[in-house]
Image (cartoon, rainbow, N blue to C red; front, side):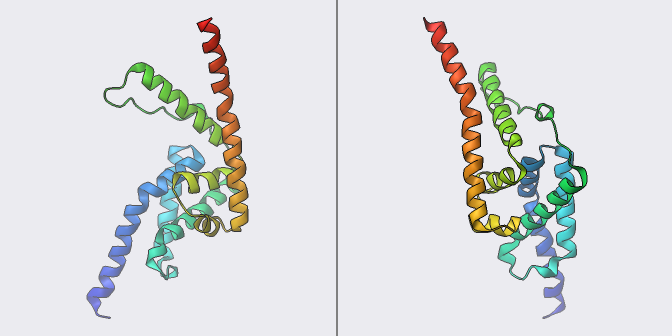
Amino acid sequence: MNLLGFISRPQRFEERLGESRPRLWRLAYSWSHNRALSDDLVQDTLAKALVKHKQLREPELLNGWLCSIMANCWHDHLRQHRDTTDIDDVPDLQLPDGATPEDGCQQNQTIRRVRRAVGELPVGQREVITLVDLEECSYGEVAAILDIPIGTVMSRLSRARFALKEKLREPEQTAAICKMSRVK
């Protein structure tokens, strides 16, 4: 291998790490619901990836490898801090152009309900549902990332989806009853 090939390989690796930053941040935020902690988790993940870059033998598996490192950083944080973030401290999204205030209010209420429901899930279920449903990882990838059997991934995902369905259904039923009482 010539010297130029040796120099450019780490640069490509660093470029790919930079491209992975938004995905890692979304994942960290979906797990932690804390912007500062998400920044820290991403930074720790990328720092560990740079130090351990020779452990990645198959470059096409970079995303899964980074998610595994992130999962380990997240679990380390949970073990060290055991704290939670109040879901009400998470800022609402801004209104898109052309949306009415009512649309924005309804969208913000839905976002808060979903965030609250996901935040109330046990950590294992929260990790699996965000990896599968938000980040579109395969069951095999999730199993490798979290270092758990595929069967555990499937059962946690099933329980998480059922719990979310139940948590999100309750206000809909209440709203439907209120709407019907106004019509009469």
